[in-house]
Length: 316
Length: 251
Image (cartoon, rainbow over all chains, first blue to last red; front, side, top):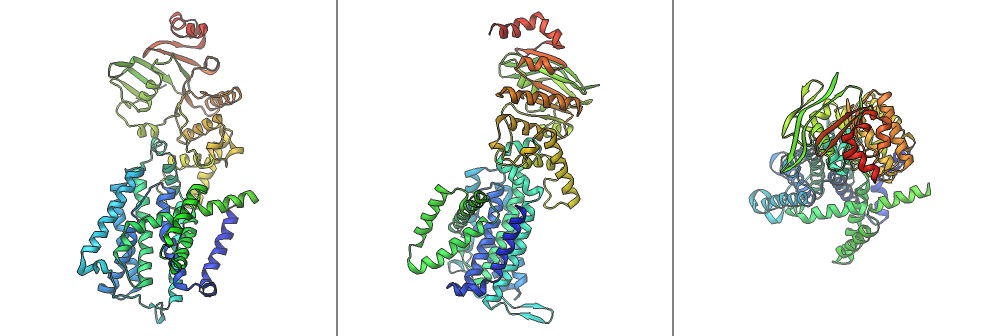
C-alpha cells in the first residue's frame, strides 16, 4: 500500500509539472492551474487541523488573508522582493495563528468554530476600516511580484508559466513537510485527540497544547497559500479574510475527503475548475457546487477521494 | 515490599459514604481481586488509587511516596495505570495505531514532528512486541471498532501496557464477554502476572475467575473493608457469606 501511494504521488507530480503544456489543450490556462495549487495548499493546511486534529475552524480565511496582505504590503511598502514578500506573509499569518491559538485550543466543536469565525471577522473589519494602509473595501493593489535573482541569473516570474513553477515548488515543499509531520508522533497525537480526547488526556497528553500547535502550523501554511495568491493576482482584498472564503475552504475539504491527506487538493481542483467554467455560463454557479456538496455529504461522507479509494480497495 | 498502601481512606459524596475508613496494603508482584456487591465502593476505591477523585480523609502511598495530592497524570508516570469499566480506546484507528500512540506517549515523543530512523524503528518494535504479548498480532491492522468486544478490551490492556505499569488496575476486565473471550482474558491476566511480573489489582464480578486466579481477595461492602485473605479464607468468612456470597448462592 505504501508503494502504491508513492507511485500515485510520483504520477500526480509529473502531471502537475507538465500542466502548462496540457492545460491549454483542455481549454485551461496556467493561472488556473496556479490557483488550484494555491487553494489546494491552503485547504491541505486547513485539513491538517480540521481532518486530522479534529479542530473545526470556520475562520481560516483569516490566515489566508493575513498572508496575502503581509506579502502585498511588503512589496508595496518595504522592498521589491518576491522571496521576502512570501516569507513576510507566511510569518505574519503564522504568528497570528500562534497568537490566537490559546483562545481556541480548549474549545470543542461548535464553540471552536464560533471563535475562529469571530477572529476572522475581526481581521476582516480591520482590513476594511484601515483604509489608508490596506486600501479598504477596494482592496490592496499597486504591487506586483518581482523577478527572482539567483546570483547573476534572473528568472522573470512575471510570466504566468514561470510563476506556476514557483507555486509548484512551494506547494511541493509545504506538502512534503505537512505529510512528514502528520506521519510523525505529533501527527499521531492529533489523530488520537480527534478520536478520543479524554482517553488521550488520561494517558497524560496535554490535548490543548497539541491543538494549539496544529492551529499554528495550519495557519502558517494557510498564510503561505494566501501570500502566493496575492502574488498570483498582484492584488488582495478583504474578501480574502471573509468568513465566506473560510466556508469555501471547508466545502473544498468535504468535497475531496477530509480523512485523506490529498483529498482537499482534489476538492480544490473540482471547486475551482467548476467555478471557472460554470461562472462563465451562469451567475448561479454556486447552486451547482451546492448540489454537488449535498450529494457528497449525504452519499459519500468520506469525500470523492474516499470513494475512489474504497473502489480501489474493493477492486484489489 | 508494600507497593500500594491506603491509610484509613474515606471518600464521601455529599451524604453518601462511598468509601469509609479503608486501610489496604498490596505487595509488589501480587495478583489481587476486589469484590463486593453493587454499590460496595469498588470503583470509588479504584478512583482513589488512580487519582480520579481525592480522598476526603486518609492517605494513599505508592512505592514509598504519599500520592494523596498527586494528579492522575503523575500517578500514570509513576506506574499506576488503569483500564475502564467502559472500553476506552481510539475506535476508528487500527490496533497498531492504538498501541503505537501509547508507546509514543510513554516514550515522551508526542510533540516531535520528526523522529530519527533508529528511534522510529525502536518504537515500532516495541509496538509490535506489545501487540504480540496480548495476542493480537494477526489483527494488528484491523480497525478497533470492527473487532469483537473481547478483543477491544484486550486492545485497552495493550494501551495500558505501553505506559510501563508497575501496578495495573483492571475494572471488570471480563464484563460483557462470552466464555471464549473470558478464557482468553483470564489467560492474558495470568500471563501478565507470571511472565511479566506485573502487580495487578482487578475488580471482578465473576467468582470463578476471582477464586481461580487471585492470590488474595479483598471484600468491600457499603464502602467498608469486610474481609481480606486467600480464596479459601474469604469463601468461609461468615460475614462475607452473609453480605455477598449468600446473595449469590440464593440467586
